[in-house]
Amino acid sequence: MAEVAADRAFQSRMQELEGLLQEIEAIADPAARAKMGQIIQTLLEFHGAGLTAIFDRMMKAGELGRAAIEDLSRDELVGSLLLLYDLHPLDMESRVRSALDKARPALGGEDKVEVLGVSEQGVVRLRLKSTGHTCPSSAATMRKTIEEHIYDKAPEVTAIEFEGAEPDPGHSSNGFVPLGKLTTHNGKRLAPQGASL
Image 1: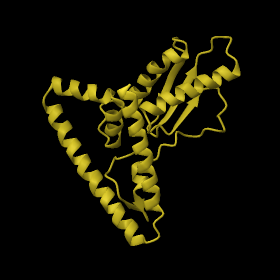
Image 2: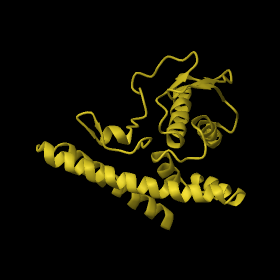
Image 3: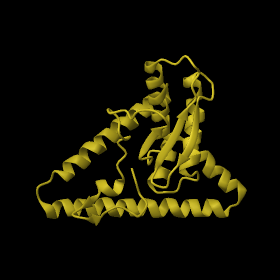
């Protein structure tokens, strides 16, 4: 119960942060917007440098350190933070496969989806394995479940394509916005290289 309350509090804080970022973007004074951008950039660089130093030391600690990093990356909050600073130990394809494993119980426990490929541009290609009696609404539900699980574990995925399926006109991407885009003004990058949110 405490974990659910903490999750709600965290989600509430993230919504507040999103609102504050939108307010900053709406500031009419370009100098004030630029100063806020510099503050955000400095904080991100500071946190990124600190986390990178921690992870470098953990990697140098050998097998025990690497195991700790993998364990930390399984935590939803920590995993998101690692993705933000490009420190996640698993590559995108591994996280997509992990997401599909996690989705399996919601899909009826069977292996109903096959990964055909994950491109460098972040496009995931899948094939749904037909059971022979799948109605269109259950296929749409299955696709939605798969997409939610993948975007949760690999938010940098740019698109999910299902072989032989018509694209869903109501869903073109996961809404993932690179942090660099949120903290860029007039073409000037205000986030550390590799950072994304």
